[in-house]
Image (cartoon, rainbow, N blue to C red; front, side, top):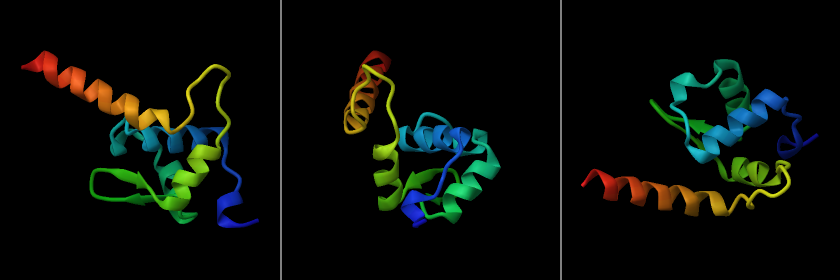
Length: 91
C-alpha cells in the first residue's frame, strides 16, 4: 500500500478535512490523528497551523463526499467568499 493509499480511520478523515478547510485551530485537533497524518506525509505541521502537502491535497480530494455537496475545489472559493463577507461586516 503506497502512502497515498494508506488507510485512514473515519476520525482521521475528519481531521484531514478540517485541516484542508482550515476550520479549526491546530491545538483542538486530535493529537494522534495529526501525528498519523504527518507520519504518512499528508500534512505539514507548523507552530500553530497544519497544511496539506501536495499528496494530502490529492488524498483530500479523493475522500468520499456526501450526496449533494460541492466538489473539493469549491471549498477555497467558499472560504474566500466568507472571509470577504466577514471583513465587510466588521468595517
